[in-house]
Image (cartoon, rainbow over all chains, first blue to last red):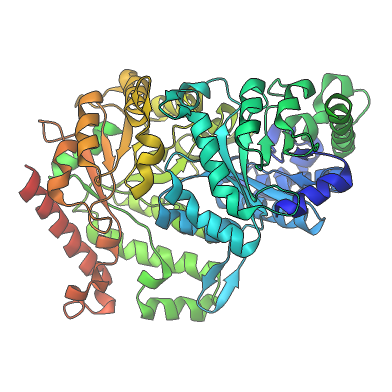
Length: 308
Length: 308
């Protein structure tokens, strides 16, 4: 998976990815009205509307970015209709050649991890039938439970050519409360970084990077620089650019000298670009996906200008 | 929520709860055949079959135990049909008067936590309509991201009388790898325990316990005893009894002198009791739920005998 991702990054000359995290208030009014009229003000309407919204966004960014990262919470919130939309979105994105990174942040004991791994990145067996349920190329995970909670996923990564991005240093304001604690093995996030590096050692691909990646927030550039050294072969999935406040300059430490090593996520800044004050005159509601395409190109250029 | 839970524990004279974690191989053959015949070997069949299985279990334990704890991974694995079954199971359990603790172990940045909180323990607004999507009284959470990742849930606990159980010391063999690290504020799990104690201080009910609880594995009795002192007002949700190896005697340190302070989970040991070698002669497949009821009574008696 990591080789496929890097091939696409090189092909697109673009290390940025689009976070498909729709909210009702981001969906243009004409679409909302259409789906509420058809299905009532129901989770079903939201699921159908989010899929239509995502589909247009995907159609306008699939040849600009290498990957998308849907945040499952935005779908799961609406129950099974939301999850159905999440899966349809993943399937559609993959049909357009995009790599799909499911932002699910699961983390549980071994037997439970096995169930999550089968559903999200492996195969689910029902008697003699096999199903690929969630249609994802990689997922995010939480490390709090330790190695045996991660191993089932690693096994599935090997078997099905999938990837993981494990939370190391997150982008939120309070991430230091636990992650920056001084331990007898360095700061906690450094210790977790070393573990991720170790977990990934047997899964290194042709570009020198492992299928086991890390989530490293753009909002903490110094820690990112530090982690870059601790985890030389680990790809970073970097949230925090744009709406969360980090700028392109803050991202330098996430990359290696080969110009690789990190993918930068932007969600709201791309998918809700048409709502930006500066875009209101330029794009009508009907053109929301054109605005997303333009924002994706702007982000690509911003990164190219400031990073390489 | 914590008052309702404790009232039920006192009423039932039983601090044990049933983990509703079905697997295909636990479902009696005649049921499997029935649903595969009707729906094919599909996720839909599994969802329908799991609900029928859970319903019979619930019918046989609802007057014995105060609560059930469905593990969402076992359902989520099967996609939206699984999630639909998860929700139906929760709704049915609550209709029988059981407290439902959703074992979801989510953990994400604030804006995402808000979406999870609305869906799982709050209300989801779709224009002027409000939905209670997952029908849960409490959920489990992961603390790795720190206070601002927990706050949205605490707000919802206050507003909707719900509860949380936050991972502090988990039951799996490698839980110490991260959780037992020595930090400058004690072992990591102790630090997390102090945070949970702090988060719960403003939500203490009539029995002296907070709506914000902790997950503390039965497989680490010494750490549990230590945490009992650090978190005097925190209710412990304790996995690890039975199939994971902990015995009733190991649980003593989880309780306070008032005989309260912990609920003990058993999943496989109850819901798949009919498959135990010693039960095979006594219970036919058709009586799987009767075996679950008997196992729930056995567990109650085992705890009573050894704990109080």
